[in-house]
Amino acid sequence: MKMKKYVFFFFLAILVINFIASDNALSKEKSPKKTKQCNIEGLGIFKIGKTNISIINDLENELNTKVIVTSNSLELYKLTGMPNHIFQFIPKSESDYQFSICPDVKEYVISVYNIADMKIEKLKLKFYKDVLFSISCDSSKELEEALKLKYGEPDFSVRTESVSCLYKYTGNKVTYEDKYYTSSWENGNIKALNTFMVWHGDKCENMFTRFLNIDDYKTSEIVRKCEDKIRQQHKVTENQKRVEKLKDF
Image (cartoon, rainbow, N blue to C red; front, side, top):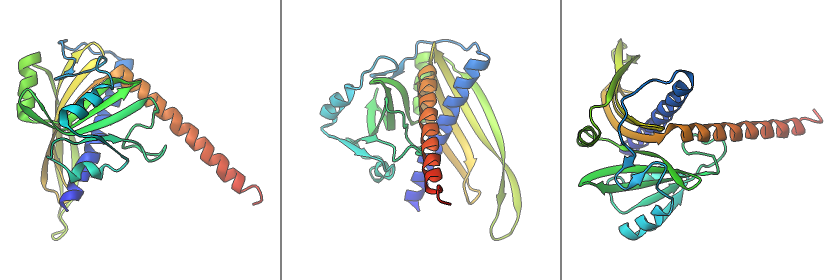
């Protein structure tokens, strides 16, 4: 059961992060919003638009480990909280939405890494053409306070969603509100989003999740278009195969 929850949190974080990044990119195209600027570039030694993929080799030496290449996100949660593990995640197929299918993108996750005496868990690094364009990780109150101290007070927003919960034994249906508290900092194309989610699980229980995402939204949009193109090509190819199978139908 514990493993299932870890997996659910992982997929949830991926979906929410992708949604936020996509929504942010689209909003930038439609109606650019003036946001307080700061000098945020990344997290610790990891700099958006500057850090080269060769840093992975440096991390292997620093942590005395080797990269584990996998398509199975469960591998990460077998070692949750254990240091000195680096994973490279690759998609299983063109229909995979967990990891990027764009051939110019490489994704790595460090199980635990210390930055400024803070334990950063599930540190995900995404490279486009070997240059870092996205960072995400589990967040905490300590990490959020550190960001505020270094980059100033963020823009803050709250989004609510009504959800219905059906209690299995009583049959009572109750409406609750899921809430998303987001702090954001911006530096040109770079945007950092620290999100605290208060939501309800499959048993209507209160759940809490924190995560940080820092990305270059212009590069993220290029990657999204690359993925969409590949999926569309895959769809056309699959349809052609079906038509070929039906030629004697």
